[in-house]
Image (cartoon, rainbow, N blue to C red; front, side):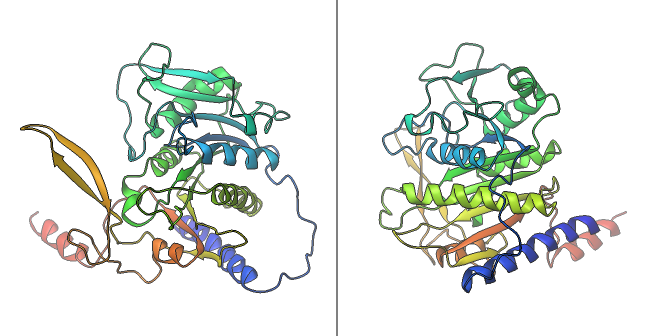
Length: 348
């Protein structure tokens, strides 16, 4: 526990320095920046949006290809194993039986085709679908956690020769933020949590929506690129300080950026209490319901308010890049835990 707390404290200290540095003119550099801070790092890249990037708005994978570009440019050796079809909201769900099938993508999106050409694994991209048949247009995608477990369980050794597995798992960049209540259902976080469960450090990257289109959520190309470039540099700094740990996920949310705009800074935050999205079930006949969701307005029925001063979504809305440690331990330690424990122990 002491090592865990010390590591988190070190990340918080790093962020405090980053935030203050972005708030004032840059000090003279004491050493030249390393243009390839991720050299020698084997990165498994995944997401929950899929790797197909086939939708008109590219919401099914553009963030992943931007991160692939940035990681390879920073010197990493990258292999993508991601859901064949969109798995947003899958959380930590995993497939307990049956078959999973890999499909290598040979014709990559044109703008990203040569990004990893000089890396040992050449940035190979695989989609993972459920079933033993080849992945077709309508094949169901494996869950994000499936892709990480499969990769570590033999797929990376078979396809990339990584017999020791990856050095790091990066999940994202997600179409939209993963903060507050959304953290519990996020497939992006689900993949990262599966990684640390396997003893591999993990970082989750998320790109915020453009607030100008609330009715039809969209992420701009600028925000995807800024998220990826920030993520690669930040991972390099974490690596240099030995802060890539398998005890927690580093969850990064990048704000939307208007042309010419920069983040206000980088903030160390906690997972907020606010409910951002509420489920909506609409009856279609006697026994069928359509599943949907609605954004929560503050104070609306069924929408929890924010109770934390350092909440991730609050600071994200203010224009900060937020960084939050997310751990696998769900043990409640709040105010009522002591009374509950005394009652249970008293029963013998």
